[in-house]
Image (cartoon, rainbow, N blue to C red; front, top):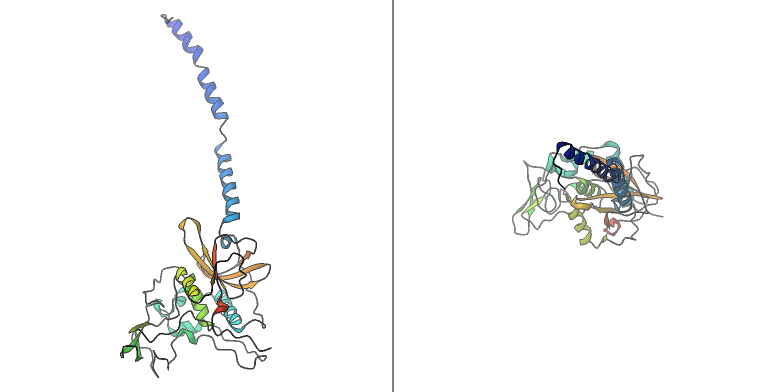
Length: 308
């Protein structure tokens, strides 16, 4: 029956109203506080990241650079000496792009440390650094040719005309982005200074790069190792000093590469463009999340062992 009087209507309203807040209180009491939800999500993400996240992002940063062992192959000794110099002196990033970003030839050579004397060797250790610049008697850079105004001419190339050295190009003949990532550039610089450049001067092009050793992209660096049969994606591969580790970040966040400089209970790596500088990191051997492969530098030619 429909209530007619105001008193009856008020009575009905009063009897129904307590039920509504009581219902909402039950619903609200069943929902965890926002802080608990956020902590739960953070805990789940941290567990996933620890298991599957890129191992280099979980690395311990900094510390003292590991010493160079005299019983290692000469190319490994050279790589460690040069990488240590970069870590301790932190040259400007432009050096790692060669002459493409304003560094002079003298700047490049100043970023390469002198080799210590080694009386145990029958022959002197090779000098660091000549691979940065075409030799003055090379097919590209004919005898007594010096740097010109932006480009250098050499002996005739494959078409009978003088080859030109362009200081603004990388090894692939592309214009260098001086504001781009420099992890691959750092590694190609270190490899060239140690006597194992990724590429050598090529006189078969009308226009050649003065920075013939320079690789600026991590994907290009991976391909350079593939071209030499030195790229391995086996998860059980055991990298050695001088080998390159390649990472791919989830969600399309990019790729990265650095070099192993010690293998103990952990891997110790050095890399460029790690939080804006040349960085040293120590990573556990038990987790390899984010690693897509390894570049075995020892597969390169001319990596002699020291005399016994």
